[in-house]
Length: 165
Image 1 (tube, rainbow, N blue to C red):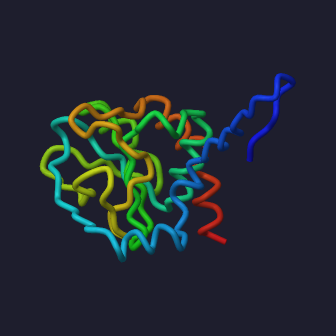
Image 2 (cartoon, rainbow, N blue to C red):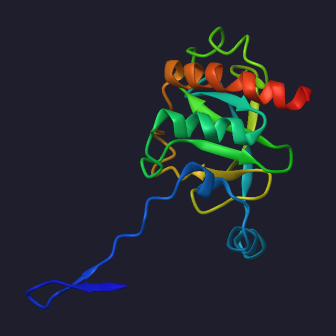
């Protein structure tokens, strides 16, 4: 909706920045895109350009990203698998193995692993859905390993307790 300024010119209201939870939400628009779209996905080798931190449940990973206060528009390399309930957050290669070892629901995919990913920023499916829409797949924006590990260590115990109940 346009707002008028004192000089009579119209200013466009800025759309609010979506949250990580908004971007990952399953909705009718996303489902329609998957039905209409090409949905090209491919298995990509992990460990060379990035490692994938697999977080289950997705909600835990989204809460950690929100707690880190990293912007959703930067183009971070993040993929959700809605079929298995796993969020994959890409971090720099070789940086994650030990930091996530003791966090329940988290594992690291490095050398020798593959991850199903959308082929382009316009592709996606229920099994490989861009949550962070990358601007350039050749030079990905990766999440800081230390900050992600710290947030997951803080938040994971609450999720473990909820499952135990």
